[in-house]
Image (cartoon, rainbow, N blue to C red):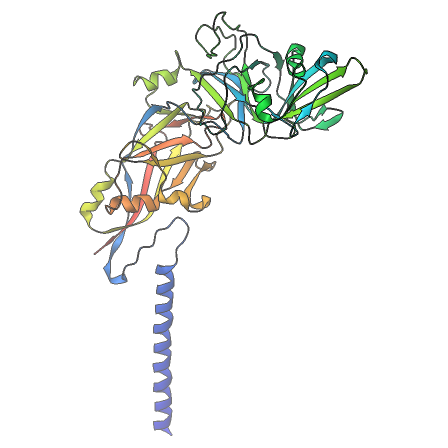
Length: 461
């Protein structure tokens, strides 16, 4: 019996040992093969590990002025003016075609038609800045042909007829509905246009197609016109030369206009003088209309101008602005030095961009920033981390840290292992053609909260 018992206990002990080995192997495989979001897990044998290290890599920043930005066929078009004591005066306007709401239209005998009124409606989805400030805008008729297939930029100059066809002063309201053609509609701006503009349309008697209509009305240009007049003898709109703006610092706002909303339209109300019948016709702004936004910035005597010239009053700050404003270049010159340490696996690379607190009101924080790599030609290049999930890449404001945070693990892994060249990064406000955000950050010279690139990495034999 003792031999049988001994044999049974020996076999049981052996099975328990083998089971323990299997369980340990499975646990090790799970720990080193699972990929968590934001963690790069390269393939290596456990015996090749030399240890896990952490470091803060050197970061060097500089300011850039954005030359131009494509703004055609965007989701929103911007309209307004802001005076920011840090970023100066910014204006935004837009140009758009208008289309027939039907294949063709006949108004009747031009001799019997009288324009009663013309109304331009523009849906406003949101605003940025001091929305309680009154804004004045004017509408001009474009004299240039616009082409839907062309690309237009914020710097595109528009030729238009000197005399505005309509103007309005208003305060933005994003909560109350507005009555439009007898029904409540989403918040929008209503601008009455001159009856002479409506008569010009009616005198054609009708239009056989959109092209026929566009040969008569090429489009409209809507721009902020706070306290200035169009200089005589000039038909090219320029935002600043020759104009005197009367807008106090901290005043003004920019509205986000949804041009292709069903609320955004041009409506002509007219009467047949022979029959006495009054009617209306609606022109639409569709996604097939050529349209684009123009931006202009006046940085004179501002901290941004000083920063761009290389003589900032405060050497610890960085400035970001959408609407083709200013961006930041970030260089990490010593990442390649890690190559001297042999093969490295980057477990986490996190770029932390602290916000300068107390510099946002009345201008809110951007929803998101975007970080791109710079290629050999100085152009934007989306990094590998960008194509991961949003929760991996980041770029949103972290209220706990008071900073915007990016996970750039995969890109840094490629750089330190010689798979990618290192020309640095560009930092922008995300959606810079369709929002009006600005931001002040602390740079690497800040003693309180400097920009940091934190690395966690593993050396491999």
